[in-house]
Image 1 (cartoon, helix red, strand yellow):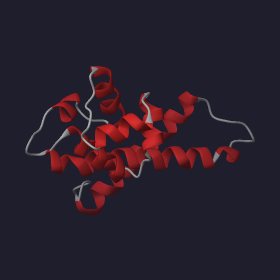
Image 2: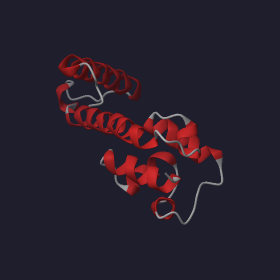
Image 3: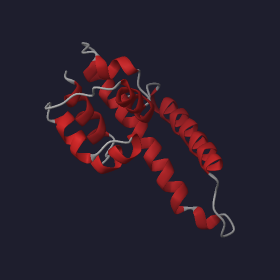
Image 4: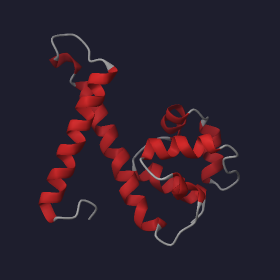
Amino acid sequence: MTFGEKLKLVRTGAEERQEDLGESIGITKRTIILYEQGERTPRDDKVYEALSKHYNTPVEFWKEDKEDDPDKIEEYSRYRKTRNAARKLIDDAQGLFAGGSLSDEDKYKVIKALEQTFWKIEEKIDGNPFD
């Protein structure tokens, strides 16, 4: 599976727009389009590192073509989708905090707590959080 194929499948599985991904990792929408179309690959390791951080993947996932790549797509997409949902929930709930806003550090803590709760529930449902 090519880099561009993996990028498109993970991004769309996470229900992320090209613009949002580009803004998050510091590249343009046009560059993401070129990557996904297979017309370009990153020249700089910083892009691979940014994608790895954004989707919680090993850097090698983006650089190497392995047989288990298709199995990993859903896992990595689901991580980001859950993270985005938690962030939206926090942003939408800002009014609950006495009219004030949460610091970035506090938002991070709430997101981590929500993620941990989500994964615990998923594991209790059927023992496999990725089914």
